Image (cartoon, rainbow, N blue to C red; front, top):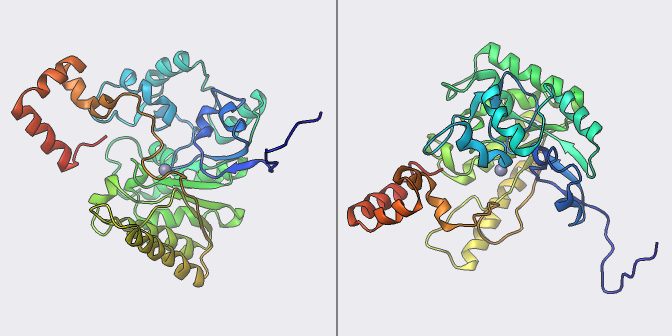
Length: 335
Ligand SMILES: [Zn+2]
């Protein structure tokens, strides 16, 4: 085949170092959206979430299922993140035309192999997933018991022996966010015999902002580097951004200084022998979400109002607006 390539560029296949395609690949095995961008390999199982293993419960933190959350469990801000399996699958399976007929990590990989997928897949085990299944949905904001730790290690061993490349944490998300540093260190150490790696959505915002000692993004970056150093396991920081937030919107020089100061933390840990790397989201603002309607930012209030029209009606009233404003500024119920 001859391809007219004038004005084009020939490259090897790209590797997407941070993908949540491990869930969507079940829905779109040809991974068209990746392949059409030239991505031939993706690293999935990020931010503490992987589709496997499964249990008799259903852990709900995969991105493509968001639309179904409300159907599965009516809620104002957050649905319970672990649901009875039956209840979740009754909504998810017909809606997405997918069968969650696997149980172990090996079962999940075999399913993908049998389906046949178009891209190369580097699978990671999600710490949030195994923590949810080992510790349960309630009262997860605590240190795991010895038995729960044992259970998590068993999940980890099983995944590693099935072909996982490592483990990921999502330290801004429930339930990974509840894990203290020693828990993560203990689990990451288990990767040592496999020459595997630790991939972390480090603690940046959200839940752990309320944990004493973790008020700043830079602390989350240091924690990740420290885990890499203490365990001697290769560590990848996901979607790195500056460890220092400067308000109001800083002069570009200040911004650049903050970035340099952040990178100096890596240099210091590397000098001590930590094997560290990071990836960044190549955009200049915002995140990964597509929000087609502005009103989607206000979903909880729309629900409480009983629909968009009633919400708009409520906004006409001064005291409602005041209350609404106060609530947003308190950042206590963001979703
Ligand atoms: Zn993340």
